[in-house]
Image 1 (cartoon, rainbow, N blue to C red):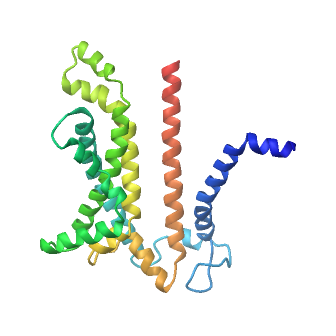
Image 2: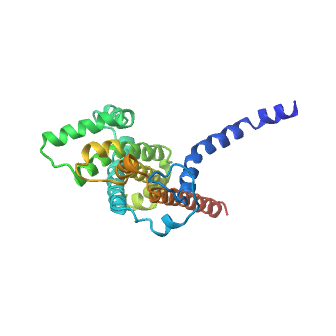
Image 3: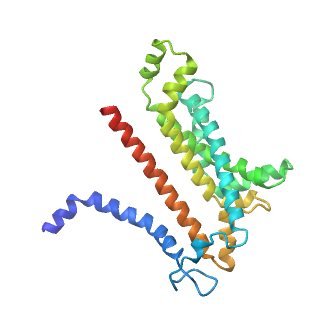
Length: 267
């Protein structure tokens, strides 16, 4: 009975830990197999511990080129989506204009729509306009896909802002530009950063939309898919592990900075 009572008291914590373990387990498998030395072409079963793949992560032909291309696409798509998404979010929250409600609803369509539908629609658009498929078509598609997520994140942050802070800045003779740069933008920054990180991850990881609109361009997800048909190099696991560790470090750094700011504010 004591065990049952303990489980009931800690049911939420146990469920949270089990969910976290379920989410992290595939990443741990990828991390473990980045140190494997397979005897064949496929890195699906453990054979022997080795640092060979870590010593030469670009040992597979064209892999680092596709990785560099994916990073460039993700960076530019994030920049475009953050700039456009932030402006759209401010317009939807702060201003009243005709068709505002319809636009507010349409913003969620890319998130609700299956990716294959958007990919096929964009491909049809590009072909009808006579645009050659390649880097720029993928970039346009990624910005369009990531835009909704940025708008949602920034909009939520703006809606939670206290308008009295901006009013206080204006009462202290701050102009519109000063108020925006020194009050509004710093408060909205966490939402903008969250939207940017989400956009980067979505762009870097996307396969379906990219596959439809890439032409001869090969991004890292497309390289991984192609490699899986004839073999899975260990270096793929190395890149996946590095990206996972980098993402964890970024999140931890953001959390540390936030905690320090809270301590400074309350001191």
